[in-house]
Amino acid sequence: MQTNSPHSLASEINVTPLVDVMLVLLIIFMVTAPLLDQGIRVALPKAQTGQQMDQSGLNITLTKEHAVYLNRELVTMAELRRKLAEVPRNQPLLIRSDRNAYVSRLIELWDLCRAAGFGEIRIATLAD
Image (tube, rainbow, N blue to C red; front, top):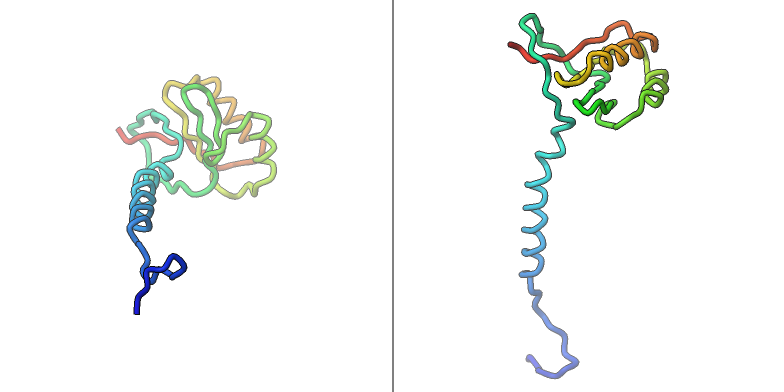
């Protein structure tokens, strides 16, 4: 028996707002998920003698604006020096430098990594 009194409880649930919210969340996820994986964009230089390499380990990125990133985290040279002192030296280190960055800045990064005790330092390039 159903009554229409103002104190009776509704016995059905309206799922339309729930579906609307879920669709909006799905669209947001679909749009942002590919952006999370990209990282810092740099135009790598080309090399004819480049080799395929594993990108595990530490990654240092030098952008054309000469900003320095350590594993996608913006750092200053002093912070980079401090952070490199805290990690084991036996892992490979990859420098990704934009082709329009100054060579002097790249050499400064290279010297900082060598002074920190890293023996295996590689520079990322594109295959020609």
